Image (cartoon, rainbow, N blue to C red; front, side):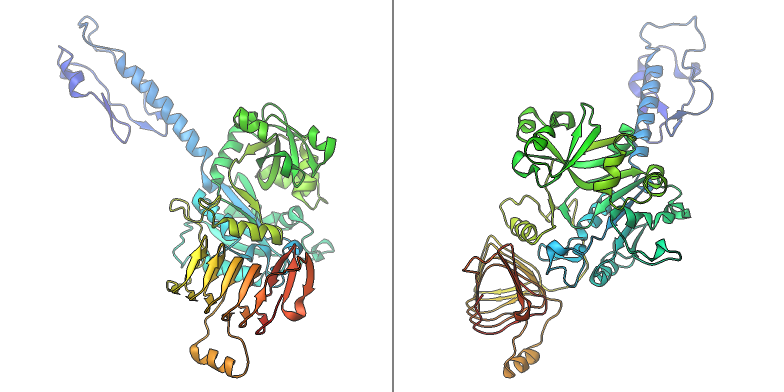
Length: 521
């Protein structure tokens, strides 16, 4: 017996030969399946003539196969329904003021901060959505959103080759509305979603069942539909993606206590001492091996949530109408009333929330192998198309480094560094442990000659310059014979009048700043 692609059953040649009674003399019926259901009357596969019986004929094989196929078809349709991305909408939070990432956020929102030489942080959740099949995305923005809006319009629209089908990518900027309450800007993550709750009552959202809440400043690769499917199978009202954490890092995160079924019972924000020990859980419940669970006895929230749509609207409008934040207010207060479940994400994840974490996450990309890689053909990280030429490298040495496209490097030494797009590095430059963001444009030879004639500094890094432990923001102009090493080990300094800051011991050269020839930091 064989089953065709459209679910039709027929006897194979072997089955026909096994019967001494001609097939034409049998009253066999054609069976067709549709969406896991048997169509028509009850199937009767028994021979018409009960008196004629051959011991070689296996009369139950048809009914057994029919039952198995029908059951498998129903299960398959159920799994497809639970993985249907058309019933999911993603909301990416554009971040607050980004004070801990200052001065990189001086003129841009956190999700617009460049990373990895050629990307921006917003590209990570956007690409995860695309690779997961989720094509309905809202991005909520408020602070310094001009460059973020510009990048989104260039990278994720219907004309650039990224096909969203019947979906959409829309930026929702903080705005004022009639009434006293409408005069407030976003007060937090939950308040931002609350101010646009009416979108879920729009005709485009009538099929939406679950709402995915994402942050725009994390670095990780995740299949969100695995997350959503787990949420639906468990029957949870809210599911939180969490990381297993060891003792060393546990106090830096908000931790969760779970029962033996993965249900979240309580929360604790950055606990220490005995409070920290009290938050230890058996992480084998979430799928870790016994050995790994002993090393990582805590679970921390990633700030990635999925809500049933009706539950989210109820929490925002009626249950907690004045709560401003998901992580510190709404979710902890909901643990006793609603079924909140933990979902284990045991892979690379980094919160790019500080200058130190930004610096280390970029340099970690140069490791062999890296803990996170942009080189995944099956699940790529998308960004805007720039149509830049390959980099031109002349008599240079590069060790454990990333050099992005459209750059010019001449007779220089690049060591454990990330070089961004359109970078220009001249003779005898030595970069070590440096993140160079790159430039927005090229200067022509005529423009450079005119600048040098006037005593100016072209974009890029001038000859004989030595730089270490540094972040160089976009369009920076660093002259000849400059030394940037923070040899005195200063941890914090505001030298904005001279074109730089020192944050957590890392020198940050400001966007569009000029560092004159022979300058020493």
